Amino acid sequence: MRTRHAATAACLLVVATSAVACELVLSEHRSGAELKRLPLDAAQPEWRIAFEHSVLGTTVIDRYRFAHEAHLVEERFEGQGYGLPHIAGPGEQLTRDGAGWRLQLDRVVDPLVVRPLPQQRVRLLLGKGEWLLGSFSAQAIEFRARGCSGS
Image (cartoon, rainbow, N blue to C red; front, side):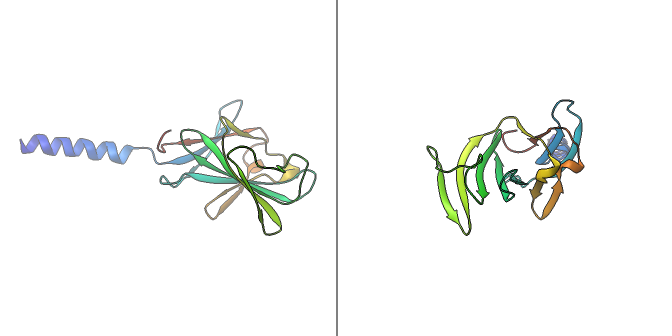
């Protein structure tokens, strides 16, 4: 009986240590070529994408949270017009945030694909790290979470 319990415990240990960690996987959208893997907080898998607005020249920061798929949960920006929200939609909240605005929402974005245009300095912000997406590829980049709850 002890041998069977020991064998079961050993199997569970192997399965637990071989489990995939919660991570963000970036790949080229068309080819599927993997570009980068970065660890995510399994309790709250989030990342931000920052870019310079093409007309206003101000920074826009989009925050995404993973829950079975990517959800855009917040957008921070300065200025109005030119593709930026000016009113909150149903279930959304638009508030002043210092000199700018903060839009809180919950919009599924699946697949989440970003084109890393050099003039917009598109960046991935994760924890204290920052990566210029154009340094990974000039092609459209797809973001997926792997090994997280619901993926």
